[in-house]
Image (cartoon, rainbow, N blue to C red; front, top):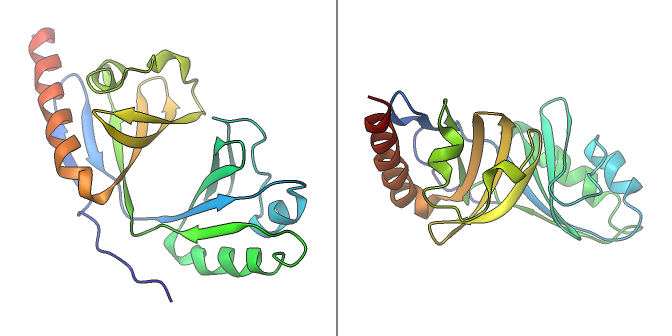
Length: 184
């Protein structure tokens, strides 16, 4: 049985002419570790798991991002998590893997606006421009491990642990204000 941990309430954390930072509504989130022929897991999940680190795949409302050589994060509607877990359990005997429901551990921030990429440089040493639209990466943001998804040129999602929402939210709020002051 999985215990759900309450997440921060969705809504806008910071907004300026430069960017808007919001907490997105809660969603299902799974961590998958697997090796070898992924066909059984692809069938169970209803999508083809990406074969390169940083590449995303989607089918309907289910989305997967390859984080490492044998690791993916899978996002899905909260109501679909139990069915995905059961489907993957059905192939475990022929294809051992680790699938963990981490839905209660993380929250997703939306970061968008004309200076969204510049805002991210405030806490991320990675060159944001190396993350192509439609890709994602695990990285460090102000000392915190995050998963950064690039949905459009100026629109990102950042998955962070619940306990870091306040810290990163304040940093991004300050950054929004500073960037807006530069625009004025």
